[in-house]
Length: 273
Image 1 (cartoon, rainbow, N blue to C red):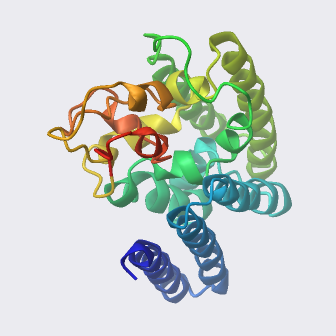
Image 2: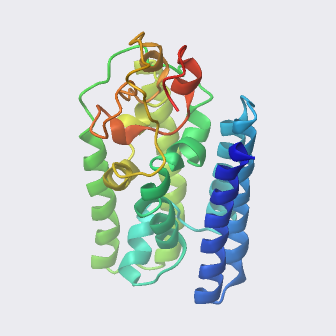
């Protein structure tokens, strides 16, 4: 029963958010939305605890495609960071603002960068590329994501300052263009650096929001340093170059962990959990 407790608690958390938003916003959509996402994440975690290798990819596809296709393309909601700025400037607690608050601002206090590992629709595609384990040292160009973050803010600010017409339509096409750009850049970087997660490390502006709270995450990889034999296998399989063979929160790239648990599976002495 103990191994099924984390999935159950996670579902309760999502359901609590779903009911809260449904009652506060008086909108049944939020109940269905967060119940669906929470259900997918719960099923994925349950599959993982039962040793299914496809568990994380199942969750990625179920949640990522829902947000990209249904919310983004069908409902025409910009779920990228530009959508967050848009609704924030409107002063409306809706759509992307709620998504960011739950998944990317306060959510990381509970599950760190779990969004990146289990729900991101960009990574959903990039993770199927052949470079699952980094073959080169991490590049010192992570500052680019801060530039992209600032540019996204400037772009939406400019639309409001110039009083652009039909902003909803503009935001929808920004969502289309932004995703095409992210996929193209992500695939090019993955091939150039032989690293599926190069986009996440150097370009993705969302990480600017995720990193601070992720430092204090309740859910994280723990290392029993007394048991660890420093074989380096965990370091070689980590897609985000996290120093997982250290227990301290300040370990190198500690806030980059996407909870894929590849390091846990690779550890020959079960020092990681």
